[in-house]
Length: 187
Image (cartoon, rainbow, N blue to C red):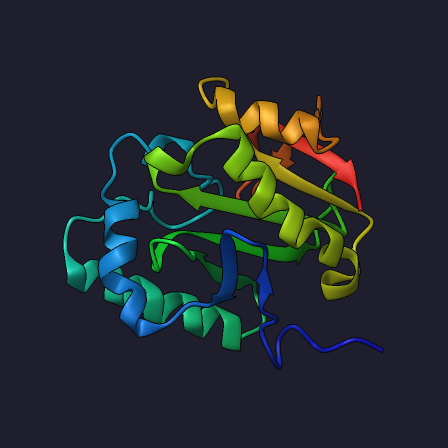
């Protein structure tokens, strides 16, 4: 049996990128992501309590602390995405096995938040290539889904190249809200 992702966050890396546990020291780099007005509209904040736009280091530090508590409660895992050449965090990636009474039950739901200058097809493909092969083992799910709105052209190209298809199904939020623009693939 593999590791329990909620006991130890696995590290994954390619030649260019490293996915690792978020650290308090990432706050300054991540503030550049979450204060990026070109990036924020592409984030998936469906069913979340806020919209992930921050303008102060205090807000970013509070969010990192919140993410760590959510991980300790086994709700989701959120990795920092590190550009190995620049030696800085350029985004985060969240993943969890979604349990629900809709099409997306037992689904690895992935949220990818990137600084806008990294929102490029080849970069997204590289990052997805790190985590997708590990998803089934880490989260015991049969499919993976992620949101990409129509203006996210580079993201959509990357997803389609990685075998994702736009789903006609909606994610149903805890309050009954329907969320669309989800791309899915088997893992």
